[in-house]
Length: 227
Ligand code: ADP
Ligand code: 5GP
Image 1 (cartoon, rainbow, N blue to C red):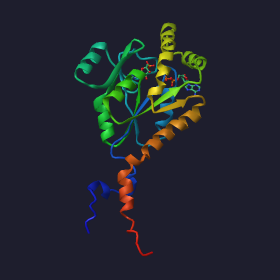
Image 2 (cartoon, rainbow, N blue to C red; image 1 turned 180 degrees about the horizontal axis):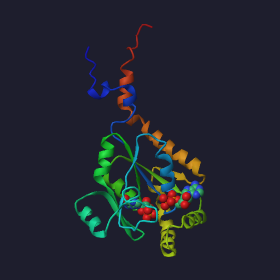
Image 3 (cartoon, rainbow, N blue to C red; image 1 turned 30 degrees about the horizontal axis):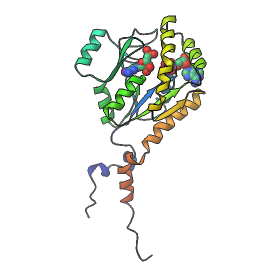
Image 4 (cartoon, rainbow, N blue to C red; image 1 turned 45 degrees about the vertical axis):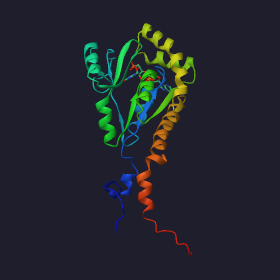
């Protein structure tokens, strides 16, 4: 009997529970909101979740490695890449250029891996504008005072850079309305668990599980009208 199933549906059920195309997760917050910390927390815990390393013209901070934290480039190299259409989105944030590599993201998504973009609110707006299927999460600190304390405590910025980031923070937080999810970063463990839960919940959305559901349904005999 012809099942009418495509080659996709001949895969084991467990394979089908994973969507064929990965999901693009856009994660934003004001500087010091906790994006980096939360993302680093969940990456080793959630399978099939990748991270897109951005390009930036910012100087590396002590301990930051090229190719791991960012691809650190000159302004000339950045503009060159931008001219070649290398970026899915790019923006000037707190005085430096940042961009997301299109080819890296495409390759990850096509391989069925979900990808996290850790980008600012302008970048999040650009991704929305592309019409790509994406899920956005805004990480919100408990208060301005807490944000100031955390950002200052990170000790990675000069007094000037810190003041600029804090000064930009209100306008960034106002953008929360544009996101699919708003996640309060109060307790780290709780917030990380919630971020992982968002990833799992998005994976389980009905429209992303069509193949799986059809395959399972095909194992059921037709309902008998006489029973
Ligand atoms: P972002 O990547 O958004 O700029 P970070 O992840 O670097 O922010 O977090 C800023 C600082 O706040 C870091 O020093 C980090 O350790 C600290 N931090 C982040 N989340 C929490 C939290 N829930 N509780 C306490 N400190 C936190
Ligand atoms: P930082 O200099 O603290 O690493 O990052 C400053 C801001 O730039 C953060 O809000 C960070 O999320 C954002 N950022 C990092 N990479 C990108 C990117 O590729 N595109 C955009 N638009 N913003 C980015």
